[in-house]
Amino acid sequence: MASPTQSKLIDIAGWIGAALIIIGYGLYATGIIPDIIIYHLLNLFGSIGVAAISYYRKVWQPAIINTCFAVFATIAVIRHFL
Image 1 (cartoon, rainbow, N blue to C red):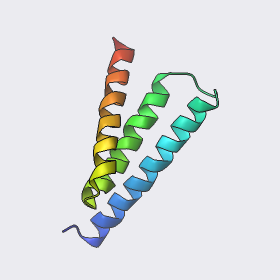
Image 2 (image 1 turned 90 degrees about the horizontal axis):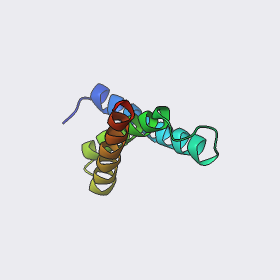
Image 3 (image 1 turned 120 degrees about the horizontal axis):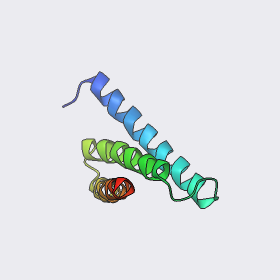
Image 4 (image 1 turned 45 degrees about the horizontal axis):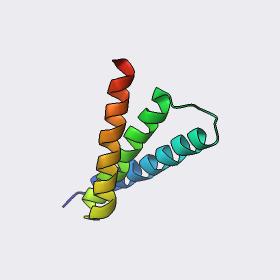
């Protein structure tokens, strides 16, 4: 079991992750940013945050979905540099 401090940090990571995903998709969907690396990085770090809180709370559906999103975003970031 995590300590209260660890639990709070995991909660914060989850909220930051959710915000990053919403910001990234919102900027992309409205045409403010194109399909560039910042979009993929926002999704990568956002997905990691949401996956972390989901695993911690044993909520498996969002944990699995966000792990997949993190993998896809990682592939997109790697492809950007190739």
